[in-house]
Length: 254
Length: 334
Ligand SMILES: Nc1ncnc2c1ncn2[C@@H]1O[C@H](COP(=O)(O)OP(=O)(O)OP(=O)(O)O)[C@@H](O)[C@H]1O
Ligand SMILES: [Mg+2]
Image 1 (cartoon, helix red, strand yellow):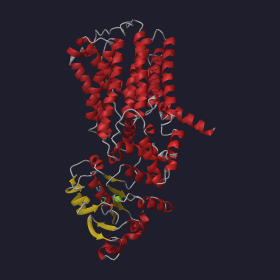
Image 2: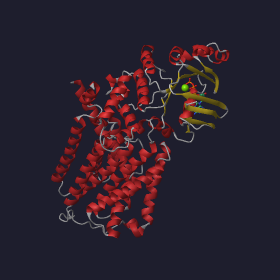
Image 3: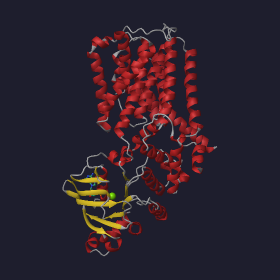
Image 4: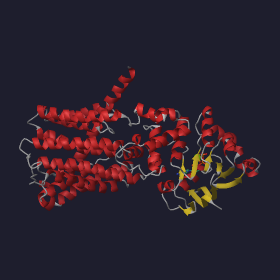
């Protein structure tokens, strides 16, 4: 019973559409959870709800035993709950080095400094180069984000999240929109995530999901209909009905 | 390690000596233009000083508009607050040392910036723009009504600053005021160039592009913007104080909608988000306005309008922004 991340009975509806229906989920250190489900099941909404980007109708979220339901999104990040976005959100006229530097500065309480430059802060520069190298994008450290390939932008999203040294990392379709040839890089990055980190990843790519996850959670119409091992998920009748029937669909839409 | 060296060598993350050179060149350009102005127009120093004061306003506007992405049509509220703060300090409290007056102006501007920012950040987009107009009207009305303190529509007269360092009096030719103003502008410009490259400046640029991403990095968006508003207010307030010191009177026009709108036009003419553009825009616009209104007092507004359309059509990134773009292209072709 040492859950780092615990969600209790989370509910949310948009008008008549229920997108979170009593969701409860807990994660421990080192967990590798894949959250899957058909398009529109409420996966991204789940992340928005737990990170505070969207208020839930009811329910609670706790991080390392402390209730964080009433905190805003920035405070939750500072407590170690970090997410990535389904559609890359980066600063188009900044470089990958600047992105990671900003995250490091923020984490270490230096992002408010009005003088100085990270280029002159050896510890920040060391982390920047280490972080970018870990994801294999150090060679484009100084190119503007608007000039780098989308697959590299996705890797930068992950580097950015990791530079915040999270306890719990929520990845929203880290491989979405990445050409097949580049997904192996993303997969390597996922395999190389710190061991003690609890990771929840949303993805539609079943091959990626099965290689990554030690636990699979299936969401359909805002309800968790399965929570178990990757071996069992394909055998589950409800999952088949709700999700795998749409598998071909889901894949082609990625 | 290799990448560290690569970053330093390329200098693209603004960490190398590149930017320092650029800033020093910028400073040299400011001082050179100021010197040329002094030599060419010795009888028109009052105008040059006013351009200097307005340049501080437009620099201040660039901080919130160019670096934080907040469009505002009420920025003169901060400039005027600085002007009135310095003027009231001199007239009602006998604070007549020019440096002290400038400091009071900066503080007054910063306070106005905090207030304006706190209101502005309640809205987004168009609503925010409307709020900015409401703010400048409210400031204007407040100054108009508080005539015991501000002189109302007659303006606040009777400001007589002491000589600078007790030596250089504010004479009829305005030499002292001009040199005093250029000194303030040069110092502020260098400090702001450092500011926009600092971690705080990077954070602001991030917010301009995507506030949600910034909050997902754990940084407070509104806290950061409010802080920038206070800094911006201090800069605008310095400009206002300079205007009060040099003209020895503060009028309601210093916190008018017109001044606010003109400041935004100057920024767009020069180009946003570089600070250099703010200076280029102010100088171009105000010199052009003076020149055109002198040769054709009847149609000068038409000609100004034509200039604006030409800039927006042919130099969409502003004069400075477009010029640097062209230079880059030429450079890359070599
Ligand atoms: N802000 C919102 N207002 C109204 N409806 C919303 C909002 N955000 C999401 N929805 C709806 O909620 C449902 C769930 O959306 P969500 O983005 O969570 O799905 P998802 O499981 O992430 O799907 P996908 O696999 O396509 O990313 C969808 O029907 C969507 O249209
Ligand atoms: Mg989604």
